[in-house]
Image (cartoon, rainbow, N blue to C red):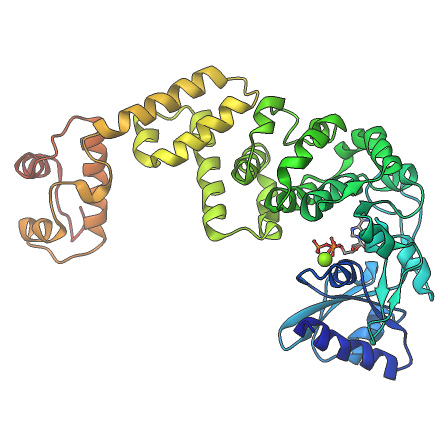
Length: 399
Ligand code: ATP
Ligand code: MG
């Protein structure tokens, strides 16, 4: 038994001792029934968020108005959510308001797919009013209730269907599939950050190749802000890395998205790559000199941005591609590749000026870097010292 369930069971027991109903619910039940690895264990209960908070020592309010409190047990977070039903959805993405209910069944009914609408009690007995287990057995993704209604309420579910297919290698049942097609247009109402999270999971899944034609046929691809501009052929050849570049593109177009990057659970390298690609795009936009771009970024970064620009409809696509190509070609010809290539050491500078080390050294290096790259100062010790003697002067310990 997974450690998460053993700890989660303690939460269920505690809630029940206090007279509440409590169950495991959602993805963890699905994954448990399928014998898959459990990522996180969610709990549903008729206890109100305030009651959950008083019962457990360590809690975090992550959306009490929506019924969710995180209970921390030995630093492991468990989402505990009050049974709820959802009202009208007028904006295709969020219920107008949520109301709490006393019945588990009402809570299961609001969930997206039958395989996700199952609960288990603390003895691991299954509660499965929508035949989720049967759907798992038949490897089928079906909405709870009428697909048209469910996708009309919340278009993100369309993307979630795609994501689950990519992760589980299931088929989407026909009614669900047809409804996806009919409502794909509503994906444009979905906040970019919510769809990015689903898309990231899709790209990281084991069966990503299978869902690409589906995304094109259903119109999902063309209704996602970050894929709309991507040519179908390019899209077919996208890989997990493309997600990173598409995210960079989104952030470049809308910097406020930066604050959602942590939600994507990216590696440090992925985060760094996004940041750097955004910077290249900004440098292109501000028309920074090709030589400066060539010097500042490594070849791979420039190549990645070139692929991104090539696959998207940028207004300055041609001139940007030309610049990037030039920058890549120029790299081996630059007089220096990095600051440490400058032909004079810190110690030599200190000796030359008879000064102790300090910030001035970094300042001199950055001036030298500029002179060597842009003003044809030769990268040779004697020439550098000559230049320094003419151009650098010390005043009260500063240059
Ligand atoms: P994962 O293993 O990736 O976490 P999951 O099924 O747990 O998959 P979550 O996004 O964590 O997915 O959501 C938890 C549960 O909440 C789902 O299993 C589903 O029951 C419900 N749910 C999540 N998003 C929606 C939605 N947009 N509409 C309806 N129900 C949803
Ligand atoms: Mg989950």
